Length: 431
Image (cartoon, rainbow, N blue to C red; front, side, top):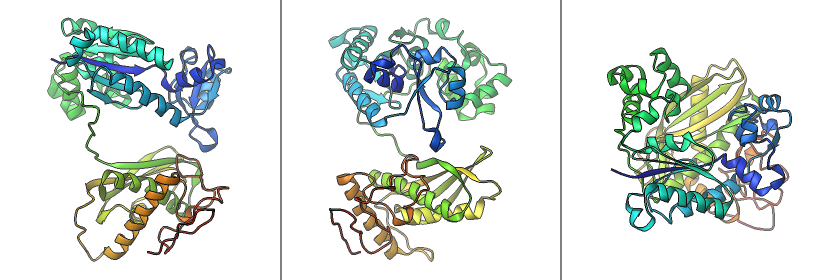
């Protein structure tokens, strides 16, 4: 039996902002996206804002209506990543079994740490106190014998607290809780369980697993095992990397789009990010999926198999656009677009020629992409980009248009024969 901790940074984004700007302390604060790019939703809030009923996912309009005095700050992801790394380094002083779950949460297996640091509860408190002393942030820690129950424990008491759910007597502690308290029960699953009159974790534990599988699929048996204490998912080592099943990127556009050219530009911009990550992982795409949200907020996704493995943005984007044209019945303007690489394959796999493939052209695109990766690594991610993306669409790189007013940076048509020097640096290359 393992001894597992789940450590959760309290109100992480908002806590970092209040730490860096003490004038925010005691005020209702929400970290929100930008209204002008239509990503204006609440990403995080502090307890003062939560007292007004503000929830993660509220629009800025909804949040300010609930709390007229709400202080809104925009996210600084690099700063949050810096604190995330610092906190994980603290966890690693106590165990090498540290499995991240997002930027602000981690599971720790401390089974082998007792001789050095004491009981699981003592370790949890030492970690909590160390994080507070060294970063100024607080964490809540759940202590239990499975990952699911440890996470449930960290949610039961906040902020700056430790909650133990022991194997002996865990049922009495968790079964009275609402069924949506456990990880894996979102709004859709909650609605299905409600129809089955499953309202508490105790109800879920006593339900016939076959009934859950019939209504929830494989997730049903997973939930049943979790609430009965049978979950045996182990905490992964700190250098463990999950198998990548798909790689995608999406954006909510600053304005609705309707023309083919705007769709092409957006897909190409997103494909730059997707294929760069594919190359970093040593993978290529055996298929492409395109997701579309129209301005009535309805979402649909389509998939297509690629003619040959893809890892360069132009061909990846062209495949996505071909899918878009073939499957999307355009009646309404488009509010958001996404594109995913699916059916992933190792990059070293031989590229089987077909009637629809141009192996020489693909090789040329990939070599150009590799050079662009090196330039971005040295000089920043926006140092080079396809020339056709220059403009005011504002759909790239996290909804921030990096191309406006940056004459000192490189511009290049990714399919062209040379990098075009627009600043002091020169990087001409003939393909």
